[in-house]
Length: 246
Image 1 (cartoon, rainbow, N blue to C red):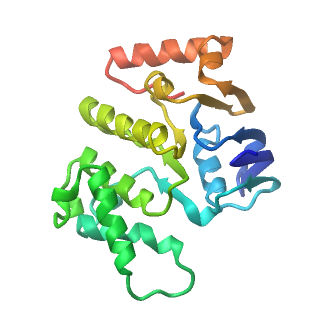
Image 2 (tube, rainbow, N blue to C red):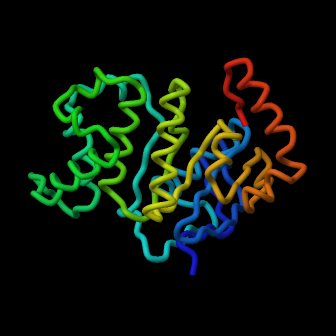
């Protein structure tokens, strides 16, 4: 039985349809890389999976996981990067979604889990630091720790390495790979960094402005006609120090 199943999913805004007739399935432990042109609906799909948008048609079915058990690492805005809270406070806030109703205080279990996830991400020494004072790579580790407070099953990552230097990018990819390979957390990652993202993923969903272009294994994607120009573009952009928008 699949962990996540999208059946004929259509998501729309007032301005029009963003995702149309999308179908795919993920098993527990999969690592899905979501790629595609700008405006193809990649981030919209993440919103739909989080329950932040009601499908216009179709459905998303979860088996063995609920939406409250999904960890989410969003794209960061400049305002979010300047958030005036301690690292521990940011990580601990990831426990909020697991509780129903009004919960005025965090439990001892919540605090212990936050500390454990900080240790997993190698940021225990940053506990009392202000989030806004950290480097981009450190901030992403904090947000990944926060996401892990919500889940042991499914992580949704929306362009997690955007704006990071090459070293911080490699370190974050390594952390995500370990979560998938060693802890069997299912990963869904939207990425423009196609060649690097493909290195770790086992499945690819390529979205186009006219609908799904490809869904299948990473090996099948690498050898497919649809990937050829996108991977060439990605390599060329890396040589120029740019990111491919695919």
